[in-house]
Length: 473
Image: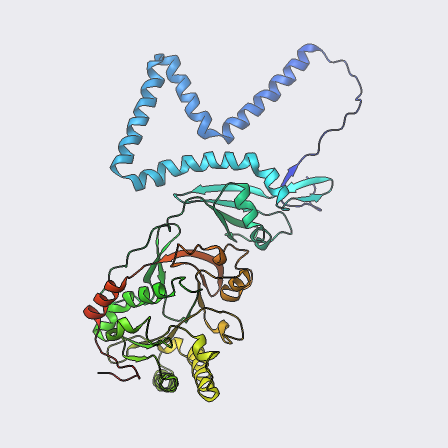
């Protein structure tokens, strides 16, 4: 094997040429012996490579020779009975340790049959030294909603090459959608083909806990059926979505998770609702400060938040790098329902400049000292949101244009599977989440609180009653 000019990947041999070869007379016994040895070697290799098939086949054959038909029939019947009992007794472990491994083997064989044409039509095959080289399908892992393909890339390829054709791969393999992420090694890429969709049903609100875990606030249901939790410590959150996309679901899911801390005084929420209080007004008792009409009062509140942040920074300087909330020194969460109304659409230039300056300081310096901003808006364009890059955690709900996806979640997010522009109107609360440092989008559906649930939440956990211009009663 040459040690230079080697390209990584699976080689597809070219079609043979029809040429005349020299005729050499060989004794028949030698020819038969050669064929026998060659066939035996291939058979052994196949048996070892596909041990999960050859092993049971040999066992069934031995039982038949030893006990007749009763042997294999009894074994098969016993295995089936054991599997049915296991499935009925504890379905999660049966699926994890029995069903999904078998399904993964089957799906790998199925994908292998389509692999070459799929790579060729997706422009992922490479011609080198007169040969066609394609990425290698290393492993397939299945669960209830998706198949996870681990692929070894051809030399010179990068994960973005697969991300750019993720939609093509989904259609080729008959999947609902496709996600692409970097693998565990530099030469590997993970292609996740989504088949089921557990996010079609509305997600019920999560239980309120007395002391919230600010590193894992339960807000939504993930695409794999697990709970999506938000790490509020050390982040600022941007929520972007079209009209009726479910921005309210994100806000109320967050307030539901923080309700225990609000009631105990561990968390103070300052709420801004420039739309006259139509969205956040129902939760008035949950807010320590609330503003919905007077934009100058909103500017005053934001500047007061900056003053609080700077006082806390001076007090904690040299002692700790991360604020730990207490009742005496609580966590501040600034919730803004429509950020564009404060940064782009406000006609009072002086007030708008004050708001922008205060927000810029809070977004850049507030995370470490426990002052967090959760902002929602509809239009993610730069002229509307000049400090978009200051939000490490971004949530993209249904968007109206393809270009808005990358503006919200970062360059290339749509190629990596964040199809925010294709979320149907019938699925409010469905979103894609991107965390700072991890470009892979995560599809989730936030919990839904109706008006009665919001009223009950405010009644049960409201600690303070706010008045419209920022005071507390």
